[in-house]
Image (cartoon, rainbow, N blue to C red; front, side):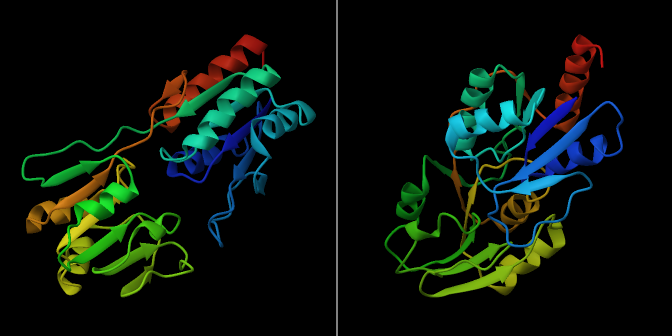
Length: 246
């Protein structure tokens, strides 16, 4: 049973590892190509887009894909919409993986905003030392008068003015995140509500230090069916295989 996994997330990696060597399935992992040196998965993989929903639908038909697992990032709204549309066009069963969002806890000082432009506005007019934990795709919204610490898997280009860049790949520990915030004298954290455990420690570190957090809300959730983790996607896939007699 040929399976296409749209990946780039922890969940996609977990699914790929679970399916490696599984005789019932012939999985392929697709990565968008935004990371220059991705961790090589244990299953066949490809890099790059498909050309929108119709291009993905054509790929599903041409490659005789029997099941589509959309395990893209919670903020990959366009890709999730394309995956749902492509699956419908190609008549291929699809499931979306959407990890639970982070929830505000006692002691959190969150300002929740809808997008990056509003996140920049929420920083205010006075110069502040800002930790931008948003990746490198959406940095254009940020500029003077603030000083920025940017953490990304790959170095962004261009880099906003008055910015220090750290290249690193999670997961990150609480002690390391606290030390990062203290060392760079961070006054406010900006992040997307990605959910998951790999990068959650920065929120606990900010909470412990009493720092405010500007939290960018998620886009609208994908069309159902939706599961919350890799285990849910694998259970869905096992059900699909049983229905096909695999």
